[in-house]
Length: 138
Image (tube, rainbow, N blue to C red):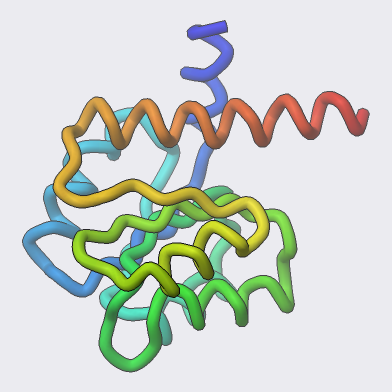
């Protein structure tokens, strides 16, 4: 099972949407060895644009950002893709935003600060679950 998850991650194309440049760099450096590729965006508007122009398998996104929040970005993305998994990365957020994030289809929440192992485990869990769902459909 572990080998299968590693293979899933090796083919995963990630969209990383984070407005804090240092944190975006740390996350990118934490996962780049495990995934196929990472497309980066610094806000929700740029994230939406990059989602529409790239073949993305997983989105990692902050919730609170300038120009467009991660929640608004995902609502727009859901107009094009109703199932792509999203892991929201958030530090201090309102209960309303957290509930909105949880209620959006196929979205997960990881509270900042988190360790690299927590992030990788969450990605493996989400992508493993996604793969199980695809196998059931087939």
